[in-house]
Length: 118
Image (tube, rainbow, N blue to C red; front, side, top):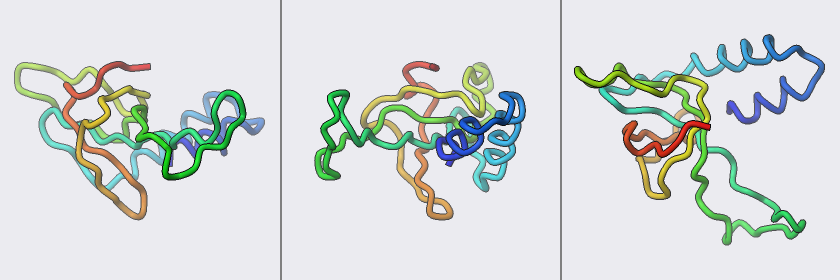
């Protein structure tokens, strides 16, 4: 959802500030609140073409390892959360649990499963 909004709003002649504001408003509509150090991530769509222009069939696409943080839990008592809503993150291939809310796929994972913030 955020990825589609990014294309919709940011590629038009809207200023960067308005672009981020509209995307952030859409992200706050998520109806799930993770507990403790858990994070809800919307995976980026899988690559459809290689750099050489070859189209990848659905059966050969790899599971994405990049996504946008949609919701963040409060953190543990002794460790504050380092990621925030809107961050683009890299995570492990088999990290988290896949869920579907309102027809949109999300992943719930621990903050420790996140490898990097881009």
